[in-house]
Image (cartoon, rainbow, N blue to C red; front, top):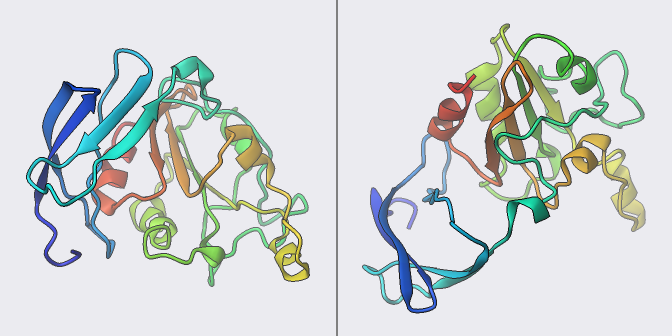
Length: 220
Protein backbone atom coordinates (compact mmCIF):
# COMPACT_ATOMS: atom_id res chain seq x y z
CA UNK A 1 0.00 0.00 0.00
CA UNK A 2 2.92 2.37 0.66
CA UNK A 3 4.19 2.47 -2.91
CA UNK A 4 0.84 1.80 -4.53
CA UNK A 5 -1.28 4.16 -2.41
CA UNK A 6 -3.46 6.30 -4.67
CA UNK A 7 -2.98 10.05 -4.86
CA UNK A 8 -6.58 10.56 -3.74
CA UNK A 9 -9.34 8.59 -2.04
CA UNK A 10 -13.07 9.11 -2.36
CA UNK A 11 -14.57 9.22 1.14
CA UNK A 12 -18.19 9.10 2.25
CA UNK A 13 -19.40 9.93 5.77
CA UNK A 14 -22.80 8.68 6.92
CA UNK A 15 -24.96 9.09 9.99
CA UNK A 16 -27.20 6.07 9.83
CA UNK A 17 -28.45 5.96 6.25
CA UNK A 18 -27.97 9.70 5.73
CA UNK A 19 -24.91 10.77 3.78
CA UNK A 20 -23.47 13.91 5.40
CA UNK A 21 -20.34 14.25 3.29
CA UNK A 22 -18.87 12.97 0.05
CA UNK A 23 -15.42 14.26 -0.78
CA UNK A 24 -11.98 13.39 -2.10
CA UNK A 25 -9.00 13.28 0.27
CA UNK A 26 -5.43 13.80 -0.91
CA UNK A 27 -2.57 11.53 0.14
CA UNK A 28 0.05 12.95 2.49
CA UNK A 29 3.48 11.33 2.36
CA UNK A 30 6.19 14.00 2.11
CA UNK A 31 9.12 13.06 4.31
CA UNK A 32 7.50 9.94 5.80
CA UNK A 33 7.29 6.29 4.81
CA UNK A 34 3.65 5.42 5.43
CA UNK A 35 1.10 7.55 3.53
CA UNK A 36 -2.06 8.77 5.21
CA UNK A 37 -5.25 10.52 4.13
CA UNK A 38 -6.46 13.19 6.59
CA UNK A 39 -10.16 14.01 6.41
CA UNK A 40 -11.06 17.47 7.73
CA UNK A 41 -14.68 18.41 8.30
CA UNK A 42 -16.88 20.30 10.75
CA UNK A 43 -19.97 18.54 12.08
CA UNK A 44 -23.22 20.32 12.87
CA UNK A 45 -23.83 18.27 15.99
CA UNK A 46 -22.36 15.42 18.05
CA UNK A 47 -23.29 11.87 17.18
CA UNK A 48 -22.25 8.51 15.78
CA UNK A 49 -20.95 8.42 12.23
CA UNK A 50 -19.36 6.01 9.76
CA UNK A 51 -16.61 6.74 7.23
CA UNK A 52 -16.30 4.51 4.19
CA UNK A 53 -14.43 4.28 0.89
CA UNK A 54 -17.04 3.82 -1.86
CA UNK A 55 -14.41 2.89 -4.45
CA UNK A 56 -12.93 0.21 -2.18
CA UNK A 57 -15.88 -1.92 -0.97
CA UNK A 58 -13.60 -4.55 0.59
CA UNK A 59 -12.32 -1.99 3.10
CA UNK A 60 -14.44 -2.14 6.24
CA UNK A 61 -16.31 1.10 7.12
CA UNK A 62 -14.95 2.86 10.19
CA UNK A 63 -17.44 3.96 12.87
CA UNK A 64 -16.50 6.99 14.93
CA UNK A 65 -18.01 9.28 17.53
CA UNK A 66 -18.13 13.07 17.33
CA UNK A 67 -18.29 14.71 20.75
CA UNK A 68 -19.45 18.18 21.70
CA UNK A 69 -16.55 20.63 21.78
CA UNK A 70 -17.30 21.56 25.39
CA UNK A 71 -16.78 17.93 26.42
CA UNK A 72 -13.25 17.75 24.99
CA UNK A 73 -10.42 18.57 27.38
CA UNK A 74 -7.68 18.72 24.74
CA UNK A 75 -7.20 22.34 23.61
CA UNK A 76 -8.87 22.99 20.26
CA UNK A 77 -8.12 25.41 17.45
CA UNK A 78 -9.14 28.85 18.69
CA UNK A 79 -8.50 28.03 22.34
CA UNK A 80 -5.60 29.59 24.25
CA UNK A 81 -2.47 27.45 24.49
CA UNK A 82 -2.19 26.31 28.12
CA UNK A 83 0.94 27.14 30.07
CA UNK A 84 3.02 24.49 31.82
CA UNK A 85 6.66 24.23 32.90
CA UNK A 86 8.86 22.43 30.37
CA UNK A 87 12.50 21.49 30.90
CA UNK A 88 15.36 23.39 29.31
CA UNK A 89 19.07 22.68 28.97
CA UNK A 90 19.61 24.93 31.99
CA UNK A 91 16.79 23.54 34.14
CA UNK A 92 15.60 19.97 33.65
CA UNK A 93 12.78 20.45 36.17
CA UNK A 94 13.27 16.83 37.19
CA UNK A 95 12.71 15.39 33.71
CA UNK A 96 15.37 12.79 32.87
CA UNK A 97 16.32 12.95 30.07
CA UNK A 98 14.88 16.19 28.74
CA UNK A 99 15.03 14.72 25.21
CA UNK A 100 15.01 11.03 24.23
CA UNK A 101 16.19 11.68 20.68
CA UNK A 102 19.53 9.97 20.02
CA UNK A 103 21.03 13.42 19.50
CA UNK A 104 19.22 16.00 21.61
CA UNK A 105 17.10 18.37 19.57
CA UNK A 106 17.48 22.18 19.66
CA UNK A 107 14.04 22.82 21.13
CA UNK A 108 14.85 22.93 24.85
CA UNK A 109 16.04 26.52 25.11
CA UNK A 110 12.91 28.19 26.48
CA UNK A 111 10.31 27.14 29.04
CA UNK A 112 6.72 27.05 27.79
CA UNK A 113 5.77 29.32 30.70
CA UNK A 114 8.13 31.98 29.35
CA UNK A 115 7.14 31.32 25.76
CA UNK A 116 3.45 32.07 26.27
CA UNK A 117 4.44 35.29 28.07
CA UNK A 118 6.53 36.76 25.26
CA UNK A 119 5.43 38.27 21.97
CA UNK A 120 6.33 35.42 19.62
CA UNK A 121 4.18 32.63 18.20
CA UNK A 122 4.77 29.27 19.88
CA UNK A 123 5.09 25.79 18.44
CA UNK A 124 4.86 22.98 21.00
CA UNK A 125 5.59 19.37 20.09
CA UNK A 126 4.85 16.69 22.67
CA UNK A 127 6.53 13.43 21.74
CA UNK A 128 8.92 10.80 23.02
CA UNK A 129 11.13 9.87 20.05
CA UNK A 130 13.22 7.41 22.04
CA UNK A 131 10.16 5.24 22.66
CA UNK A 132 8.52 5.50 19.26
CA UNK A 133 8.15 2.04 17.75
CA UNK A 134 6.47 2.90 14.45
CA UNK A 135 7.39 4.78 11.30
CA UNK A 136 4.38 6.99 11.91
CA UNK A 137 5.49 8.82 15.05
CA UNK A 138 9.23 8.49 14.44
CA UNK A 139 9.86 11.28 11.92
CA UNK A 140 7.79 14.05 13.53
CA UNK A 141 10.58 15.65 15.58
CA UNK A 142 13.05 15.44 12.70
CA UNK A 143 10.52 17.10 10.40
CA UNK A 144 10.07 19.93 12.89
CA UNK A 145 13.83 20.39 13.11
CA UNK A 146 14.01 20.62 9.33
CA UNK A 147 11.14 23.08 9.04
CA UNK A 148 11.61 25.27 12.13
CA UNK A 149 15.06 24.55 13.55
CA UNK A 150 16.41 27.89 12.32
CA UNK A 151 13.30 29.99 12.98
CA UNK A 152 14.19 32.83 15.36
CA UNK A 153 10.73 34.39 15.02
CA UNK A 154 9.10 31.46 16.85
CA UNK A 155 9.25 29.82 20.25
CA UNK A 156 9.74 26.16 19.30
CA UNK A 157 9.54 23.68 22.17
CA UNK A 158 9.79 19.91 22.33
CA UNK A 159 8.39 18.38 25.51
CA UNK A 160 8.83 14.74 26.44
CA UNK A 161 5.93 12.57 27.60
CA UNK A 162 7.48 10.97 30.70
CA UNK A 163 9.32 12.53 33.64
CA UNK A 164 11.57 9.50 34.02
CA UNK A 165 11.06 6.73 31.45
CA UNK A 166 13.55 4.49 33.27
CA UNK A 167 10.62 3.60 35.53
CA UNK A 168 9.54 1.24 32.74
CA UNK A 169 12.61 -0.90 33.49
CA UNK A 170 11.36 -1.69 36.98
CA UNK A 171 7.86 -2.57 35.85
CA UNK A 172 6.34 0.77 36.78
CA UNK A 173 4.64 3.42 34.68
CA UNK A 174 6.45 6.76 34.58
CA UNK A 175 4.76 9.94 35.71
CA UNK A 176 3.61 12.17 32.87
CA UNK A 177 5.23 15.55 32.34
CA UNK A 178 3.32 18.74 33.18
CA UNK A 179 2.98 19.58 29.48
CA UNK A 180 1.12 16.33 28.79
CA UNK A 181 -1.19 16.94 31.73
CA UNK A 182 -1.81 20.56 30.78
CA UNK A 183 -2.86 19.54 27.27
CA UNK A 184 -4.91 16.58 28.61
CA UNK A 185 -3.34 14.32 25.99
CA UNK A 186 -4.26 10.62 25.94
CA UNK A 187 -1.96 10.09 22.94
CA UNK A 188 1.26 11.34 21.38
CA UNK A 189 2.74 12.85 19.36
CA UNK A 190 0.79 16.09 19.11
CA UNK A 191 1.84 19.50 17.92
CA UNK A 192 0.22 22.83 18.78
CA UNK A 193 0.85 25.95 16.70
CA UNK A 194 -0.18 29.15 18.47
CA UNK A 195 -0.10 32.76 17.32
CA UNK A 196 1.61 35.55 19.26
CA UNK A 197 -1.61 36.07 21.26
CA UNK A 198 -1.39 32.36 22.27
CA UNK A 199 -4.52 31.38 20.36
CA UNK A 200 -4.10 27.94 18.81
CA UNK A 201 -4.11 28.16 15.02
CA UNK A 202 -3.41 24.50 14.24
CA UNK A 203 -3.12 21.14 15.99
CA UNK A 204 -1.71 18.00 14.42
CA UNK A 205 -2.28 14.65 16.09
CA UNK A 206 -0.50 11.29 15.91
CA UNK A 207 1.15 11.72 12.52
CA UNK A 208 1.87 14.43 10.03
CA UNK A 209 4.07 14.79 7.00
CA UNK A 210 6.30 17.67 5.96
CA UNK A 211 3.62 19.35 3.84
CA UNK A 212 0.99 19.32 6.60
CA UNK A 213 3.53 20.63 9.11
CA UNK A 214 4.53 23.37 6.68
CA UNK A 215 0.86 24.33 6.24
CA UNK A 216 0.41 24.55 10.02
CA UNK A 217 3.52 26.68 10.51
CA UNK A 218 2.41 29.05 7.75
CA UNK A 219 -0.56 30.08 9.91
CA UNK A 220 1.74 32.01 12.26
